[in-house]
Length: 436
Ligand code: NAP
Ligand code: ZN
Image 1 (cartoon, rainbow, N blue to C red):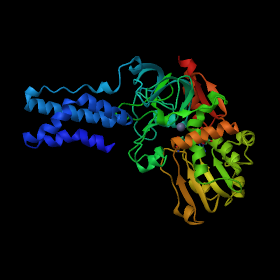
Image 2: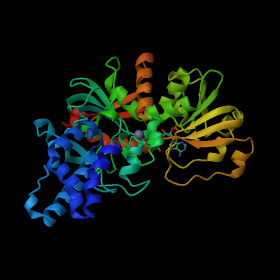
Image 3: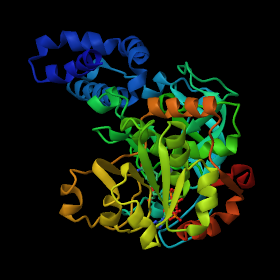
Image 4: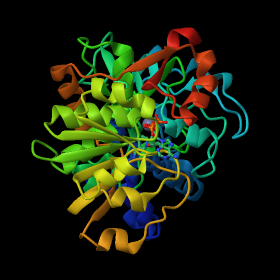
């Protein structure tokens, strides 16, 4: 990639040299169409770089034309790289958006970008409701980008693919999670850890894409995403119940895999909500002995039905005391402030507590809570695209989906209110047909 870009930037360097050395850039610039169209094939994966190259060439052309008006140089407009077919026009999507952190979600219309050569357009059928959606529309983590269309647990059917798309076909089922782009070049992207992209990944909503445009999520009728960030979805599973796998699923699967959880491990899952119930299903599927630590005693029967071996009502001090020092691994999915020191006390020596929940306040951790017993307090963010596909394939093979309540889009604010009270059984999923 660096070689063609170097070639394109060379004319500019050369501009500072005496006129007689300009013959080489003149040659280059007199064949811009050939050069660029050849480059477009090699570089179409790197459209940012290309548009930058176009700017550079146009700038060089302007400068040269001003200095040597007789040259009459013409640089073709950058859209020559993306033939103007109907596939390339913007499309409208119906959506639900928060106009500010203090307003409820309400109908809104947005424009999806044209389908580029490496893009996939998806007609969204279902979108899960993650607690992160609520944190973000209320600015609980950081100031958001408004209007905001949340939703990063997206499943639907492909309606259009770009000319260079190889792995997806029109008519297939597809999914999109929390990521829609990353640099794809840094050490973390190279290691299939796009969630930790060193250049900053592009999140599905409440983020700016690599061209500086706001991203809008899955509480909408369609989405356009580059193919590297689209997932294959099995048609064997209930599609609505697959949606939450795109965030709740991968966020719990990834740390359980990273910490090699399996037979012989005593695992506790803190919080039986969207993430928590998926954590129970995966930890059980991986062969661990699983305990749910919950503030809601009424969830005990559900926890057992999900496969948990034990249930601890954390409001009961005797019950928590009885499991002190007993877990190898605790996955903490709690969305609000809670007593980290108490949960750390439940780990064995050398045990690990991995935080995936993102409470809005800083954690209050006593140093002795981890020093005593050489304990590890760690965190984990969603999962990379390769691992997300692995998780979806694992779910298809083992018939794992989320336990959901399918809701109409107009009931999303009521669903948020129930979510804040911990009353989710166990993931709300929006039927996007109610938005069309
Ligand atoms: P959720 O469905 O609302 O579940 C959270 C559960 O935490 C509740 O059901 C409740 O379970 C428990 N809980 C709530 N308040 C509590 C409190 N004060 N003390 C103890 N337990 C409490 O939320 P979710 O969608 O699973 O998301 C959970 C958190 O993970 C959110 O903060 C979300 O933003 C974050 N998240 C992180 C990632 C990541 O990549 N790391 C990805 C997605 C989401 P019980 O009734 O059983 O106590
Ligand atoms: Zn989420």
